[in-house]
Image 1: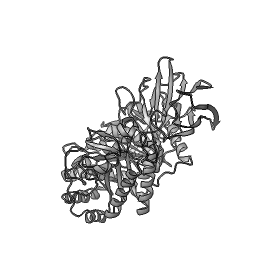
Image 2: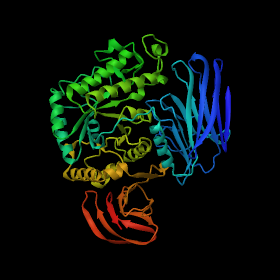
Image 3: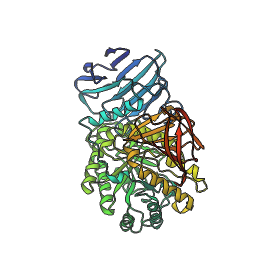
Image 4: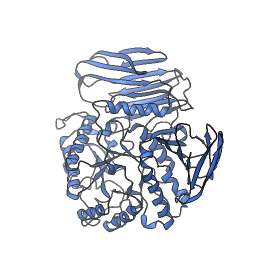
Length: 597
């Protein structure tokens, strides 16, 4: 069964693979404020598991040069890939994985078509790229390709923005559209979610000790960190980096002989305390293995652990009770809930593929929704300002209901990946706090190079993860300066009008403007256009590790120019004449210049 609909240059097709029990399918279009909406529906004769349904949009390749997606696409598979992928490459979206969103744009950064599916919960396989057989650009959404609940109907809306506007504006408006929908109630973002974080992971991994963590917190607080995330290792004496001992979630007495008092001492420093937990993993080495070994989606030999099946009420109740116990018993301020993207029917095996009366739903995404909504409600009852962190790629419009911190996926020592992933997150995350991946650098690194980690993450809440005891006085001064710089400009960096250029080049120019103030970071031999949008003061940050940057101004003007190095020391203060057009501005590596008209 097929339905076709045309709109200008767009061809839209809705098809159902097996229409034996399907009564009707429909496609209707409407326009609001220059945006096209396609309302589509599938109606069954009785309650059934709906057959595979495919919604496709074809359009000509006219001034389309690149493609933005929130996910991992392409060949080779890479989150850095913003290219136009071949037809066989795409990504999965569901309640705990990415978002059903994509954007075709031109080399000048103008939107050509930005698309989003209203249902950010239902599992969908999405492709956006080239369809060579018909020599067109194609967007495809493939629904009901994995087990789901029985129902008599399904309806959703496809949002298609063809307006000529900057690509980042089109994507941001998608986030606003999701947020405005009644069914989405975003979790509030307390002030603590917007403070710099010290994470134990990259320096200590599972080698955690109570006194050592307190020492690290004292030093981290002195340079500006206001939260600690205690990562993997607190729950086991094992140091082998696996998940064999995840599931009991009891504090290792050898590592933390008095966890409650330890947490309180850190909080008395002025820091919030968050603890890592792996949501889906239950290892064979934990005491509750026998209790839940028949309630798994699958077993992973790689992780040496099973993955819980949250379709069982007993599984959800156990996890909720575990998290509330942790927060209550130890006075925690928040939880880092990890790996929820492992809840995936694509990996399900054995018993998980057969209906079971002990489950209260056969739909995995509904079960995950119930789990996460109950976790949020239970923890907010204990602490209304609770912090909950989720990590890319289990982020998206729906998941904003259950967490208030979205962190970049793991990219140790890769400041460029951190920058790119931050920008991907910022455009789709509204006011949810976007955090950098916790970064680390070598103690032998020169401060100008180490500063790039801070510069590349300026437009997020920074998380750092060095061994504070290994840092030299110069590195401590550098860290203190950049966290102070970030705190001084936090409102401008996080709440200003954000603009980014060239995703296909990893966003080499980023700017944020609030009122008449603007901060611009340059990350290569590119040209920044300044004093063209009403700003009177511009802070230009050198993220290119060069001794000069290029700027372009619309008219000749005189500015006061204060130049600072990467330690925040002023190296010059003078009057500077900027000629109409192109100018070369000298400044230290990883330094910055503040220009005031």
